[in-house]
Amino acid sequence: MSKHALINATAFETRLVITDDGRIDEVFIERTQTRSLVGNIYLGTVMRVLPAMGSVFIDIGRERSAFLSQSDIMPSIHQRQDEHSTQSKLDLRLFPKVGERIVVQVTKDEISTKGVRVTMHVALAGRYLVYLPTSPQSVGVSTRIGVKAHRNKLKAHLMALLDRTSLVGGVIARSTCKRAFDDETLVKMGECMQAELDHLCMLWADISQARTQASLQKAKHALLYQELPLAERALRDIITDDIKSVWIDDKTTYQQMLRASHTFMPSIASAIYHHDKPTPLFAQSVPDKYHLSVPNIETQLADALLRRCPLPSGGYLIIEHTEAMTTIDVNTGSFVGQSKTNSQSKASMNVAYETNKEAVTAIARELKVRNIGGIIILDFIDMDELTHRQTVPDMLAQALKSDSATTNITQISKLGLIEMTRKRTRPSLSDELCVSCPTCHGTGRIKSLQTVAFEILRSLMSQLASNTSFKKPNVTIQVNQAVADHLSSHQDLSNLQKITNSSIHLSINTTYHQEQYVILVE
Image 1 (cartoon, rainbow, N blue to C red):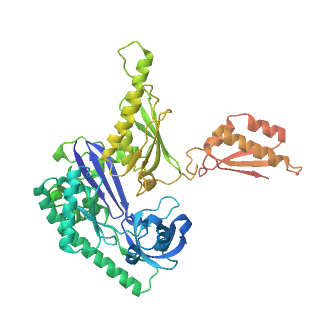
Image 2: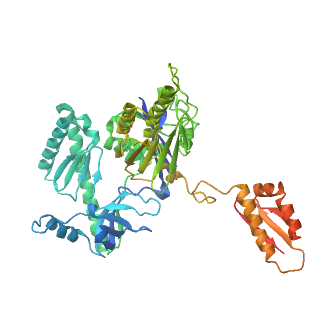
Image 3: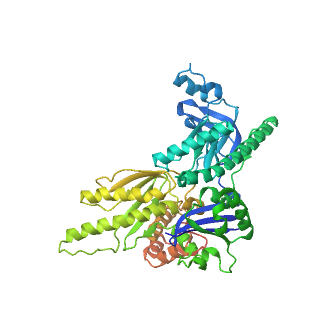
């Protein structure tokens, strides 16, 4: 496995691609005018409170109100300490009042018609730690660090860190701390943790001061903290220790990342390079220093927007997005398999199983590359053997372990379906790069030429039937070129002219799409 990070930065857009053995593994895109809001901290005004739905809507200066769920509401200190209140009463008291100004942090970007999701549980992230300034004093460890002994050792170290600093709030060790499995490594990492925690405390102090100033100015809403731009944020959240090199094609961004690397990831500083060749970074293979045969990145990005995803042996996936969920259908395609027996059913069974195994790897990758989230239905090819039906979900769970997003999967059903969810915190690649088709309005289908032609003829017959003039009607039909060709090649139009004693002319409008037409009767 050879992983590299490639960054294409311009004044209007930054694109970050993580490649793994020559194939795109993850894609991050940030456009200057539509930067992600996740991580931003706002002072907002409560506009609506719906206790029955556990919902609060807050004005943070966006077109749509931000959504605050009951689980994301932070109780005040006196409410936490009020032991005499019952849980039901406490829940009602926690809801902020309409008109109240509160500090919230964005946890999920706007998706479709939904506004941003926010929380009152502020979290300031570093590379090793997450500081929770508004939470009770506590320590936690990322669930991705699964070894109990390592978790206990990290917790003890964090408790000692809190005791030394008398810090208010909580601290969580991120998954980057999983390397601290021995005392020597933990001591070295502990120095970085201490410096990082000091930095995060200073950042919170700046945010608190900005909140005070906004309150004094009686602002209804204010941006208190804006998350780092993608290139710098990548060093903190995206680029891991197994990435061998980082290549940037913009000199300014390259220099910014070099400076940021000393704060977030000093070990990667010597592996950050400036791509200054005439061939664009995303239009060539990974730089020659590592001699990797990586396909053109631009081509791979274009392929990631297609419905059809090919599998190595000739099968393919069909990926469909709907408002409620995403469906992925597995097909054998041209894969017929090989069987050493004369049993056709045995060969067919092997083809289904082998295709499904290939599909598991492809699905895990496509979910990351396309950043597909929410409810996902996987339609695998039917398998008769029980062992095969048990193996495929296990393989999928294993393949998804490298995914940073939280996933949950079910066992395969009798129909060959697996239901799963993948946490969605930002728009999918398709949502970021595409808009709904103005012709089909996002359905992916338009009326056939024959359907449009017959619709025109029916409409024309209706208009001519209601014509009370004694003059011979002159009819002009403005249509798309393809529809005009279809009408001209059939006898229906000429027959209609004879029946209605009218003169019909076709006028081609090159700006019309296939379903557009206008009928003018004089």
